[in-house]
Image (cartoon, rainbow, N blue to C red; front, side, top):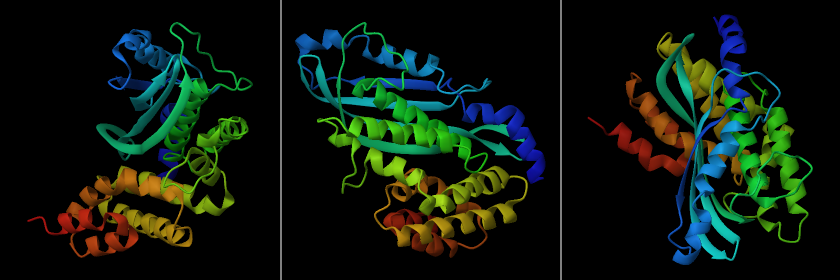
Length: 297
């Protein structure tokens, strides 16, 4: 069954995972920008959407699109210099064996608190790995992260080249005088930490466990539920062990922050509610959520 689905994925689905053709929606909140300057941002949303949805981030031909969203909240402005926080999400379809359903699974759920950039109306936005630009590099970084995660939900380690591109951006931007947001920090989330861990052999087990979570777990629940539940629990056990070994891991925090609601809901059909105690041990930061589901009538 697995080899059949691998072939199916290779021919029809992995194209979505390596797609330059993102289906990205952008929302903008510019309430903190002086009203006299907001007119300069009237094309900001459409500029980003056009760039992300039309740029080829890979050389592969594609058929499908990865659904994602960038919700931008401007924090301050000074002329054409802006600071914003951005909420980035992405999803991938859920399969029932080889059949794509209308249901989706959230892949990424990240709040990036500090995007400092220059934006000029009608500026040309292009993908160029040799140009250092905090505006475009931010978009490129998350495009590569989104594509890499999507790819690896189908085929283990297939996102490596995209994660490396994201780390390369961190290195370029981090070398600038104002590149602090691209450097390693002690905060709960930083771009460098995420990209660095995704490229580190220390986290190889993350890639295989995440793939199994989706491929052997989420996508198999409808056709072989017991095996799928076993795969989910084994994957979560591996990820929990990895997090105990690396309690400050940005990558593991990102995974559980994005998945805890789905994990709790998926196990609502598990025969024994005691499983929620096990889930709480694997993901103690979201213990209250698992307890709520355990106590549902």
